[in-house]
Image (tube, rainbow, N blue to C red; front, side, top):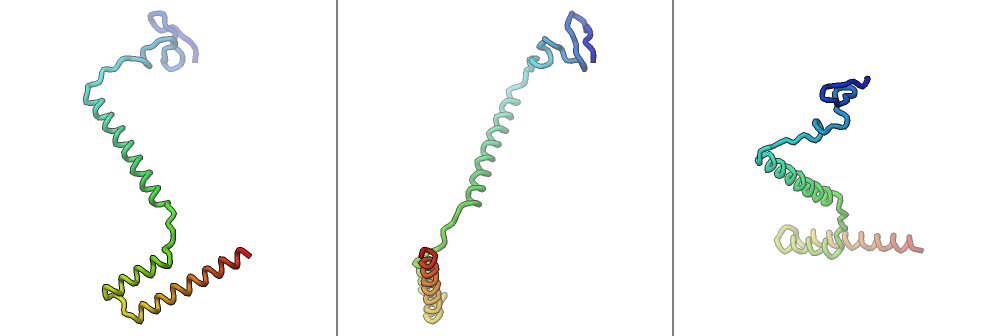
Length: 113
């Protein structure tokens, strides 16, 4: 790739890039206004898509706290009031929740000591 002379006294290097000139890199391009409107709409859509993607990612990776004993009992109490559970089934669930809570407390107390 040698340097050669290419008309009007400009030096051309390699594949035809003009060294020191402004023609290929800074040529003025007159684009119609709808080009810029489309470009602005595309940029706005990409920004909005980024916001939606971030919100979805944040929701998918959020840490959820487990339901407390009181929250669970309230949900089952509501189901009993609506007739979805009978008294016997509600008592069985209540005992199970309270037993699990006691076991969790015992495990936690054992870990601290």
